[in-house]
Image 1 (cartoon, rainbow, N blue to C red):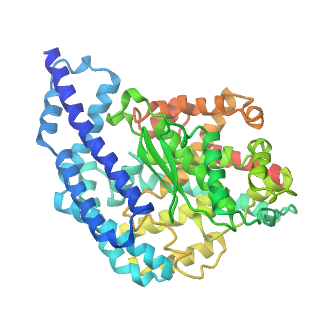
Image 2 (cartoon, rainbow, N blue to C red):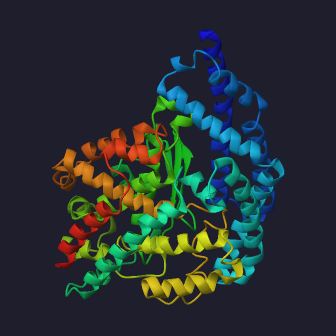
Amino acid sequence: MANTIRTDYSNLMNLVKDLIVLESAAAIVHWDMETLMPPRAVVLRSEQLALISRVSHKMSTDPEIGRLLRDITGNSQYDTLHEVEKRNLQLTQKNYEEQTALPEKLVAEIAKQQAITVNMWKRAKAAKSFSMLRAELEKLLELNRQAAEILMKVKGTRTPYDALIDIYEPKMTAENIDKIFTPLQQGLTKLLEKIQASPVKSDTNTLKATIPVETQRRIAKELSQTLGYDTTSPKAGGRIDETEHPFTTGYYDDVRITTHYHPEEFTSSIFSVLHETGHALYEQNLPQRWKYQPVGMNCSMGFHESQSRFCENIIGRSREFWACWLPKLKRIVAPALSGVNLDDFVLAINSVKPSKIRIEADEVTYSLHIIVRFQIEKDLFNGKTSVAELPAIWNQKYEEYLGVKVQNDSEGVMQDTHWSSGMYGYFPSYALGNIYSGHLIAQLTKEIQDWRDQLQKGNLKKLLKWLKENVHSYGKLYDTADLLRKITGKNLDAKPFLQYLQEKYSEIYSF
């Protein structure tokens, strides 16, 4: 009997491996669509992605998976399986039930419409015309509503939107997010008021310099290598490319990041590269022994964002990091920045000013951008908001929450690719990632009290090792709440993140 359960488990994992390999190939096809694909190829690409989705769906819903799951879980030797094997079964069961419930036709239609809508988003954004995007976005939203209604019943969630959130942040609900985002918004608003009242004013003109794209490529390569992301050696598993909207994709040994270079705004690529490198390190540091297994995935997109925000902000906007790295930057861009000192540079990169663009937002106001998106998205799926109303609602919330007036829809509702890509339920993960990072830095400081001193000396080994051992190495062995307790002993709370911001910015802005 024991041999039977072992054979069944091995056969099941072989089926799962094939599915994971196919999905990793699909990720590279998506990467190509965003980076290198010629414009005329969009129709063909939509058909390719639709076919891959159909094949993936067929593999995910193979009756043999269902049979093996039943036989294994019903076997009298089930308790002889260890923790990782049981978690693999749990995750496989969850995916099988959800995918089996979704009609193959709907899955293919969503994949095809995503490719079409993303392409239209690019054109509409360039033309600053939401009306160009509206019809395709309405089609995609309706298809995702249909999927959400189905998944709600399978997952046992209270609302369709909760079923979508669960894709990215398992077991999280809009209600719980509201409970965390409310004190987060209140705390950020109070902190913003203190900063704005401070007599200390940052001068972002310190960062005004025209840096050629080729020079910025060198900066990106050296920054990512500083954090341990290899794009140049014979054993490299990464690369950096250019796209309209920075992102990371890939699996284990092939994880790619993208950025966007602005000659007049060189820090934009610096912080997008730091951000995406955080994502890439998470993917590449997952346990090799769990490769091709469900447990060998990331815990959640919130934890993923905690790693990107950690590298971008907690490391990348710290005084300690630039005490070591600013001289290197000056050498690369010389003679630009020759008259810039460390204090002015650090103040400039930590300038706090409400803005219109999420990916350019400062560390304090960033989560307010996410709260706007979360509230709109929630209303989209509960029927309180229509696609046609999106620009007006977006603009109203930006004026209310951030005090800025949106001039056109490209800097407003069309600035992100997420909704056009069908990634409904993803946005909360960004702010949740900030909150997770607050917990992580509090725990890190308890365990490695001199980590900032080491960072100032250019030594990131202990810091990166701590992240690998405490976050990356657990993969998807635990759900988010359990992993957070495993690392810190705490439940999710906005206070540690707000405390981190308070300590950092009270020092910078002298209040």
